[in-house]
Length: 398
Image (cartoon, rainbow, N blue to C red):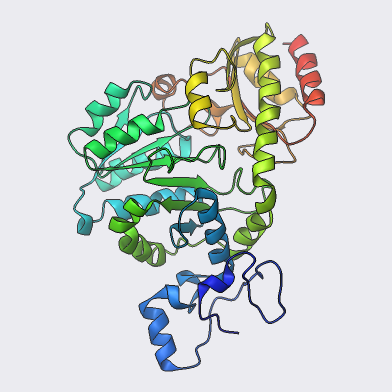
């Protein structure tokens, strides 16, 4: 069956030959035409239908429409990509394209995921981009100073991974707009708990693989734009999305889409569980410091409550030494050592300096507040009493 209108693929509007109540999984890589005119029309405007898998897929479109509803933007405002880092590549290629005339100067918070940090280094070292890192993203004057000469766009991650630091989206967006540039926020840690577009950001980026999927079964990324953002960038981003082949795999879109109805409930439970563990760790003498924004003693607690409805399922904490941190992550049975977060079934623990942020130099690690004794923990949706009890037992041997 040929779908004449992608509206037919919106959740609850699906029209397939068997009247499935969820969008079917389309794995085919090519789609037939009834007439030459029809084929020409679709190649001219992929929004009219489907031709080839790299140009669009019905299952992926259904996922994009759902994510647009989560972010409260119109359908057609989402680019689903193969990974979170491919969404960042799409952002770079699109917003620094010569046709937009914005140049190749990008302002970035230094408190970001290690994979993103490394990609930015590659853009700088191998492709001549000027990457300006804001060393103190808590200080608004640092943003003002970095942005003021002009920038193609501004990029930040809040909550930041792995320090779970919070930055003022509304205030930084105002600075970016004063200098006629875009603010893009990586919201991977806090989907639905935080609405960056509502706070003034121009675009939101996700690693869909994490909390949006929640089952470690689908890899993907997404870039979502506001109307202001789309007005200038929609055509160029559409072109790069197709020409780079960065489309999300339909199976990943399908598996993530199946989890859509429990996203709000799950993120609330992630937040509850993480706070419960954070409060236990904060009281324990073997723990030097706990990083979680919804702890009442956290210096960013007030800001976190203003721009988030929950802290999410990720926290980090500092042990007394590097050796103690390593022994802890190696000793736990109820938290698996793995470089991932946002899994609803598994507690996941990692030593960031050795793994996810290992591309950073020792000096860069200290600069972004990732000491060797830092441990990152992503909680599951399960009962935290058993995990807390095991943590308590392991602390006794450290």
